[in-house]
Amino acid sequence: MTTTSTQVAIIGAGPAGLALASKLDRLGIDNVVIERRSQEYVLARIRAGILEQTTVDFLKDIGAAGRLEQEGIPHHGVRLAYNNRIIPVGLGANTGGKVVTAYGQTEVTKDLCDLRAASPNPTVYEAENVSLHDFDSARPYVLYDEQGVTKRLNCQLIAGCDGYHGVSRVSVPESAITTYEKVYPFGWLGMLADVPPVSPEVLYANARRGFALCSMRSWTRSRYYIQCDPDDKVENWTDDMFWDELKRRLPDEVSDNIQTGPSLEKSIAPLRSFIAEPLRFGRLLLAGDAAHVVPPTGAKGLNLAFSDVHYMSEAIAAFTGDGDEDALSRYSERALARVWKTQRFSWYLTNLTHRFSDDPFDQRVKEAELAYVTTSQAGLQMIAENYVGMPL
Image (tube, rainbow, N blue to C red):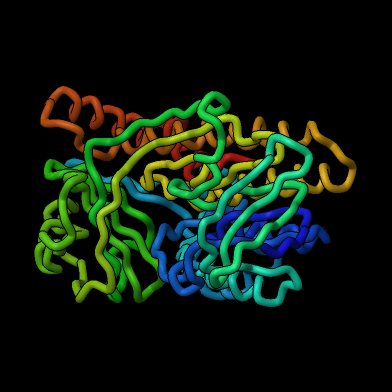
């Protein structure tokens, strides 16, 4: 066994882990990133592509926004559709000028990988048998195997940024953690295609046949989703079947103008709301999907991960610089306050736009809610404020 030391061991080289590493680099805090997958696998993952302004600002702060500033597409509104009508919700007009930016998570990860490549601190990919130890003491450490050699990394803190299925959260004793979860009775069948987007802004549709979503990755690449059974299989859907079903769920003025093409990728994602709390267990801090999962309806998952990283980096700086133990607990409190507000909106928008059952009463209530929020200034402001993101 070989032994090395660092100040912060970061578990996971997804966007949260890489963003935290780059922020700590800027603060002069030594760190090591440990990832069980290959870099190629990490870069190939396709996720959401709507960035809140706070996320854009964070990426600028760490020097990872060069391509984003050139290629990102500002969205000044979002559209809600039901009963064959489309209602625009102005974002900037209802938030004092705040907008969101369309820029794929795959591109964000690539930018962060490029930034990390210039770091003097190491990233270990394809680490096997990763395990976390003694994080309830002042001397935590991480064990992992690299190319058949067991290695020990001593550290002051461990940052668990390794996702819902990672090792970080499950390393916490059950008696020390409380989890909240809601599993929705449907999934999203998504298609990525090199076709121009049918809408210049994200469009959410509540239709008789189920939910549909139109979004973009660029002016030549679109991402579309339709509500499906959570046990459905991608193999059951040809490209033509997907396009036909998507058109049936959209207002005529949209479906008549969709340009179709071969899929680059199709996948089915289950929907859940999940939160684990607290986010601090001794010297172990959780962030991103390791700590919480939101349904993708509001495009909040990546943005919540970056807000966690913002709060966590401040706590780590206070702890490593001044020995401020309380800063670690304040991280959990500050991050969770924003997490729960964001969960509320994601849950709300999911309920508003999806068909849970064939109960006509439920659907009429949703239509009444849609009519209210799209005709009331207070309702429009509520949607817009939440969509652009809560302030840090």
